[in-house]
Every structure is written in C-alpha cells, then in structure tokens.
Image (cartoon, rainbow, N blue to C red):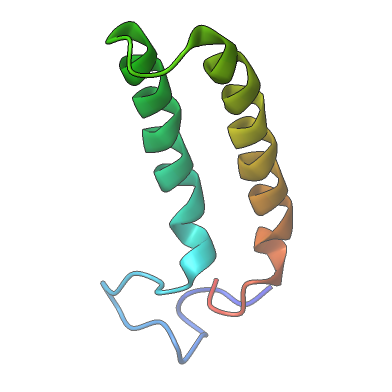
Length: 72
C-alpha cells in the first residue's frame, strides 16, 4: 500500500478528489433526509422502509470497492 507521503498525486494538506470518497457522506445525508421527509409527511413510511436498506447496501458496496483507490 502506498502511503500519502509516497504518493505523488497527494500533496500535503490536499484531500483526495476521487468520487468514491464522497459517496458515503452523500448517502448519510440522504439517509437522514428520507427520515426527515417521512416525519414531515412528504414521503410514506413504506417508502422509507424500502429506501433505507438500499442506501445501507450501496454504502457498504462502496466501502468494499475503496481498496482500488490509487490515491490512498
């Protein structure tokens, strides 16, 4: 595994620009948003019951694929 110090793509203090690093935070926001919208009555609870496991599965699949990142 290449450390941040050895990787020429990573400069000191600069974060990685790989899109897969943004997937889990976006899914976390969506996870909270679907519950908020359900509490407001915008979404049905049956949709929430379907959607939250899908978001968790997508987040887990994304974490499995992170070892392919060339910047970390």
